[in-house]
Length: 172
Image (tube, rainbow, N blue to C red; front, side, top):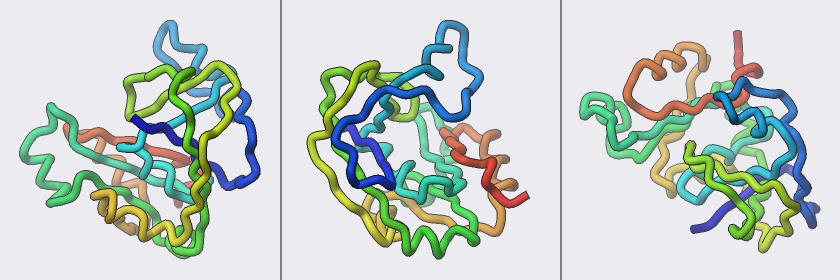
């Protein structure tokens, strides 16, 4: 298994645990997830972070319990990444840095490939990705450009996994 952290900063030598910028409501007993942590994503789900930092997006993929009807929404793709047309140029011109992380200190959240560490983490390697719109198809993810993400929130009513990131930056 491989873990990664994405950043627009290519000069990080050590990741230090820090609290999330905007706290989320957590399930009972999980308030600690808003506290100081280093976050990472597994290789299967790394496409979720191949975006400029503040880019709003909705990401979907099939789960074991996804219905055949809902699987058809993905066609022959493993998943889909929805992004607003107003962000496409930034996605095409964007650069993001993918840090490979050692796995030893990370705990699996068993949620969409997310892992956390409560300790400092020294990355193993750094890879720079440019032309981010071209990164999805090789991962089996269809990039879907839409005028607004708000209608895509209806995907929550399917049996697909739906992750919405930075929607506060989406068009009203």
